[in-house]
Length: 181
Image (cartoon, rainbow, N blue to C red; front, side, top):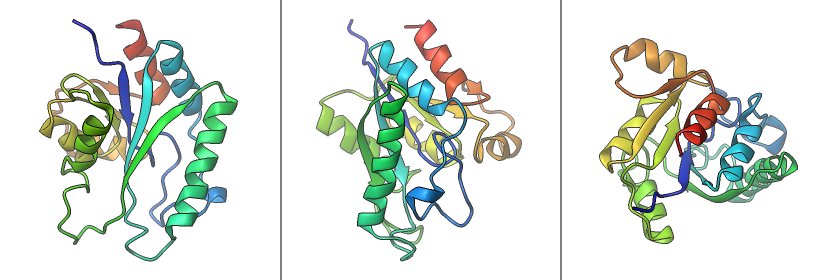
C-alpha cells in the first residue's frame, strides 16, 4: 500500500507565533523556532506540506485578501530560505458566527485539499495547536497531532485525556513523522 505523503499544518501557533490580536501584516508574521526547518525536514523525506488555517480576521475586517497573500508570501519565502516548500494553503475567510463548512472544527478545508490533491485523508497527519484542529482531523479520519506551541499547552490543559501524539513543537512532530516513514 502506498502511503500518503502529505502533512497538513495549522498556521498560527504551529508555524508562526500566534496573537490574540490576529496576525494582520507580514511584519507580524514571525516563525516559531524550528518550524521552518521542520517543513524542510518533512520535504527531505518526500512529504508535501499543506497549510490549513482559519483566518477570521478577513471576516472581521482586520486585513484583506491582498494582505493575507502578502503574509503567506513571506511564510513561503522564509520556508524556502530554509530549504522547505509549502505546496498549498487553504484558508477559511469566515468568522465564528458564519455557518460555513470550511471553518475548523468543520472539515471543509481538509475535504477541499483531498479533492484537489486526489487523496484519501485517512492517516494523514494534521498538526495543530487547538482542539478545533484536532476535531477537524478526526472528522475525516486523518491523524491529529498536537503541538504545545501557540494555544497547544492551553488545549492540553483543558483536554488532559487527549489520546493522540503530543509534541513540544513542530520540529519535534516532524522528527517523529520522518522517523516512522
